[in-house]
Amino acid sequence: MQTNNTLAIMQFFATLSLMLSLSFAYLINPLEDSLFFSALDSFSTGLYDSNIINELNTSIIAGILIGLFLGTTNVLLSSSKKVYDYVFAGIVSFFVLIFFGYIFGADWIPYESLQQLLFWVFIGLPVSTGMVGIWQNKIGNQVISAFLILAMPLGLSGNTNDQIYPILGFVFSFMLYLELSYGHARYSRLARVMAYSKEYEDVLVWFLTTLVVTLAFTMILTSLAFLFHDLLGNFLPYSFSNSIEYNTIYGQALSVLVFFMLWSVVQILFSRGYLARQVED
Image 1 (cartoon, one colour):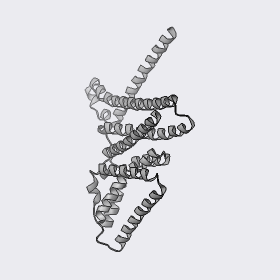
Image 2 (cartoon, helix red, strand yellow; image 1 turned 180 degrees about the vertical axis):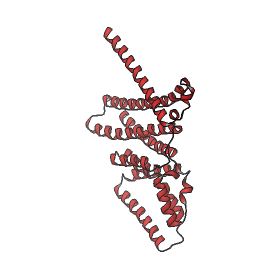
Image 3 (cartoon, rainbow, N blue to C red; image 1 turned 60 degrees about the vertical axis):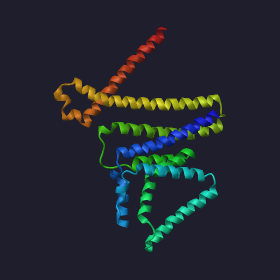
Image 4 (spheres, rainbow, N blue to C red; image 1 turned 135 degrees about the horizontal axis):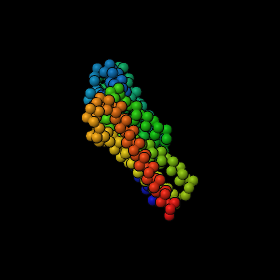
């Protein structure tokens, strides 16, 4: 029973990490800069003569919530194949009727409202796809969802180091989603072979503890590495610390490299001292 609770907790936090990673992705790359949605915007403007995407710049939350609703509905309906097939056929028929309504010029159909709803569905598509992968252990869906999270918000504007903390938040939540979703699928399959036992629960707890500690420690070290750049500038000559070379991404990358070099030296000295004490004992 305790093992089932741990697996359910993994699913819950995987879903939460999925939504957070998509939120951070659009925080780093705004919706209006997305190449994917710019293409959809051009298509919709030419089709309906309405620039819907401007109304969606602050609608990331709406899209994520719709993705959560669609993913939950998909998971619940999949328990009954007959109901799932009927609902799927009904949705397809609805959009086919909308298409024929546009072809024959039916004015009573709210095309712009449906178009905006469709944009929200596209925004939440990684969430709805990922939820199916998490709650039904479909690794293919997990891979597609991860690809959409990376590809859909992608733009050409680029990022600066001022966004380091949103970027670290995205990396943390994205890696947590990948590890928890795949870990749940892997350990659920292992449960079919290995009987539920205290040892099995210990393996799950060890996996979760190691995962969280590793990710948190990596994020903390990366944050300290970027803060080290500002700290190092206080000890360097003024002409050097205020030069263009030092304050560009090249200089910041060198500061990060120096930080991790110093960190590796500290680790080596600590490890040698620890091993020496063990040998003496």
